[in-house]
Amino acid sequence: MYIISVDHQDWLVGDSKGWLTTTPLRSLAAVYLTLSAAQEAVAYYASSYTNVTFAIYPLDGQAPILDESTASDLLLNNSMIDGSTMMSAR
Image (cartoon, rainbow, N blue to C red; front, top):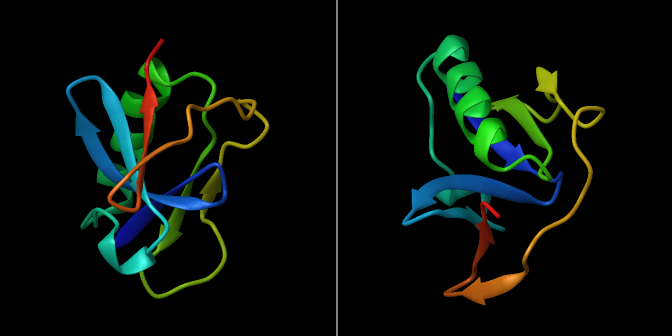
């Protein structure tokens, strides 16, 4: 099982009405059952959120399996809603 880090500071929860939703709590991150499912999710989100860096981590590990930090720059909208960060796909 795998989770996805966003900009090496938060964890991916999902997408809601055009906003990327993240959480600072690893325990609240969306869990992907296979590496290929996590890779598909990264490809999907990276196509809409081009200024965000994604990295795939094993659920029980500390080091990323796939880190796309060379592919994106940090640029996000830091609106906080209930402890989650929402980023627009502008």
